[in-house]
Amino acid sequence: MKVRFTPGRVRVRIDDLELAALQRGEPLRAHVGWPGGGWTLTLDPRGHDVAGDGGTLAVGLAPLLGQLSDPAQEGVTISGEPRVTVEKDFGPQHA
Image 1 (spheres, helix red, strand yellow):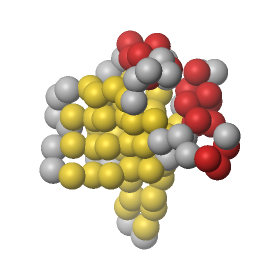
Image 2 (cartoon, helix red, strand yellow):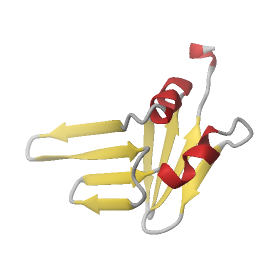
Image 3 (cartoon, helix red, strand yellow):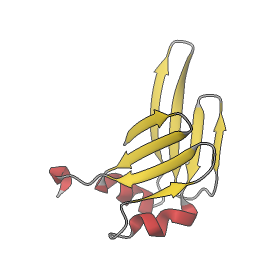
């Protein structure tokens, strides 16, 4: 999972194996820690909301998982603060 933060927006790119994990109901987590702090992003295939607390952001994908799983769709966007975009980034590494 690749994560990019810009003002008011979080962009997440997932590969085919990560999408398969979400489809199985498994959450995906990216965590970076440092002395005295850190941040964590969780993509939750069973959650319904975007919620943040301190250095943690949880993104519920349940309402959009079908759309994200559609081979014709490149990704999904959840409006709000922050706006979260989850894109499929399927390369030849798992083909």
